[in-house]
Length: 190
Length: 177
Image 1 (cartoon, chains in turn red, yellow):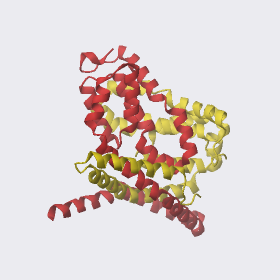
Image 2 (tube, rainbow over the protein chains, first blue to last red):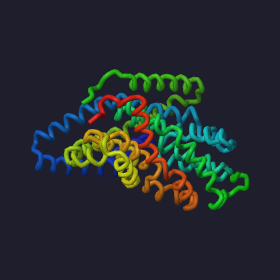
Image 3 (cartoon, rainbow over the protein chains, first blue to last red):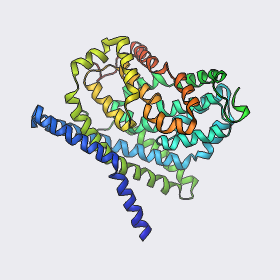
């Protein structure tokens, strides 16, 4: 009973944490500025536009968050670590790219995984491909933000433009190992 | 403005939810409940933030100098727009919550896809905030430097690829100034 209450309180404090209040303060200031400089009709139009956009977003965001939550329980990080840590070569770069794109969560989730690979002697190129894929074509970001906000067409154009880049970055990073320090284990450099 | 509607993205999203629900349920051990709870919690945490972020971005779009953005980042801006997009991207902290509302505001103000893609790529791979807070402390400055050099060309390349894809497939509906 007490634990449940504490859990509820911590969830509430996370919902209304610093990011929420920072954005709330910014939008309040911007709203007052808009009211003063452009008049109340503009404020009303902006708010109505945002309500429309938000109604459009809710079913998509809820779906995206459920996907992110479910992927985390279906694909445990240990399994992910095994795939990238063991492989190298061009195939390793491809695997790292796919796994990086599938890794959900923010940097507080993905960088601990990267460190785990690094310590177990994963190839530097694969690590760079992984980070690039996670940040550039991350599936979770794509589902929650890109697809709903930019629309399927623009999202498709972007994926077509950049999907191959993690492999390129990994390939270049591998060449750079000539002058940067080798990873902590011998088999990391090739 | 788009209205809440039934389109392909919604179908894809919920089809994936259904597939994952079946997978999690078949693997058992409370995975389904844990996954769903995590998803709902993420939604509860992020929903209110998105509301206020969108509100701020909505007001911001009235103050962006539209003529200037169209001239600097528009479809006609060519290399200049791609380079400006690449140069400003790293200095937007806060992850997708900040980047995507800014993107929408830029597109509304007349920015072209090449500069916007360059901007999004440089914000993603060169985000200064994340490099300082996570990458250097956890991976060391040498690794961070190697990764940054390896991804140096990616933002302008994204802009160039956008030009190519648009030339091949035509401009997507709804973003032409």
